[in-house]
Image 1 (spheres, rainbow, N blue to C red):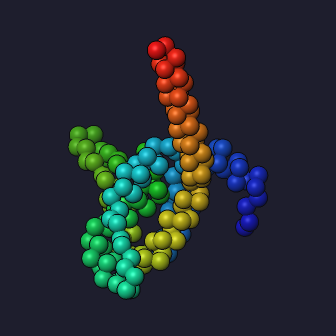
Image 2 (tube, rainbow, N blue to C red):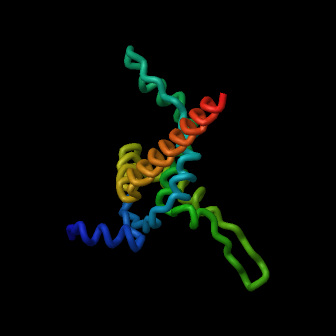
Image 3 (cartoon, one colour):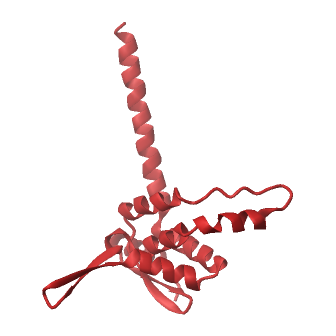
Length: 161
C-alpha cells in the first residue's frame, strides 16, 4: 500500500507508531521525539574514527576498529524503541520487581542477526521515518538566535565604553 502525503502527515502529527520488518521479524518503531535523538547522539559520539588509507588498507582498518562498534546496535535499538521504552520494570507476584534493559537486549539481537548491509539500511530507513531534518532545522535556528544574542550583548558592551 502506498502512503499518501496526507496519511504520512497524519501519522507524523498523531505520532502513530510505524512497523519495520527486519530479518523476518517485525518491530514497531516508536514515535519520533527529541529525547530519542538526544539519546542516540550519545552513542553516535562513541563511533570510532575509521581512517581510509589511500593504499586500500580499509579492510585492516575496519577489522581493527570493529571491536569498538557495539554502539551501532545501541543506536538502532534506541531508534526502534524510543527513549521511553529503553528500560522497563516487570513486577512478579506484587512483591518482586525486575528491571529489563530492552536497549541492550535488542542491540545484542540486532548485532547477532543482521549483516552490515542490513544494519545500514535499517538505520537509514528509521532516520527517514524520524524526520531528523526537522530537528536539524530547529537546532540551526536556535543556534543562530544564540549567536545573535551574543552579538547584541557585545555591541551593547562596546557602546558603553
